[in-house]
Length: 335
Ligand code: COA
Image (cartoon, rainbow, N blue to C red; front, side, top):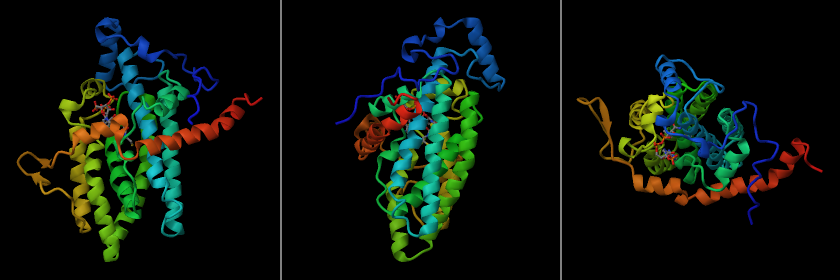
């Protein structure tokens, strides 16, 4: 049986920025915001200024940032799981060391991101509770299994590659604590990408069995990799306001296009194909054409009904249960 979610009043609740609020209850519409402050805020954003935690911000900006940074943090921590299961089975000591270090980095990214979200007034405990209860989302792609060692190569090369495209762009965004975290994360992600690429090329240029294993993993992951960037404009309810406030520096579709144009040639270069007969570069539009991923499946997965959602959350519940004594000990609350 799962333990009760942690008490939000516990001593870990952060108030270091003095802005703990009940985020959901305190959100007001833009029309209700002080118009002068709102105008000043928006002109700061327009001029490329960065917003710090203690600066005035519309409550919707705060809410949206918390939602996005928190989901990102959860994605890092859950994202460590599919690859983490391969540490004990990695082929050879060098690959095992590299994978262990990479997985450890991902958990460190979550730590940085939880801290960035805390600056906006939501405590780590509340975020953990919302992940455990299924209220908060995390990246859809981590709800699929890593069936073979080639899946580790595909995740390391293509998912980390996709993450870099997204995060490099957003590290130039408006909220300074998030940008600082993203800059540091991107440095580490570029090592992950090298590790993934090396693994990918090794399998692609290996035996027929290794090539087949890689091709099979690419075939299974490709549609999910495309969904990583989020749904197209008509289904992306948050993009407009997030782009206006430079939290997201480009649309989901533009980020996806950027990824495709950078990575498809690298995949083809090593003789691996992609499972999409419609994939082609349109010279006239300058865009890639591709088969639309299954967005119904995507929304099912992010609503908790993917192949591994339950398994992923069960691991977090286990950690919550078994790590409770450590949290109590650190807080001086053990007796
Ligand atoms: N996985 C899970 N949920 C996703 C998703 C994905 N790949 N892409 C979109 N969604 C969810 C959104 O969270 C949103 O749901 P919500 O409003 O209930 O939170 C819904 O789908 C509609 O999408 P959209 O309006 O486009 O969301 P968004 O503006 O937040 O854009 C991202 C989605 C992923 C592009 C954006 O949040 C982002 O850049 N996040 C930071 C990077 C990150 O988290 N990377 C993942 C792990 S490395």
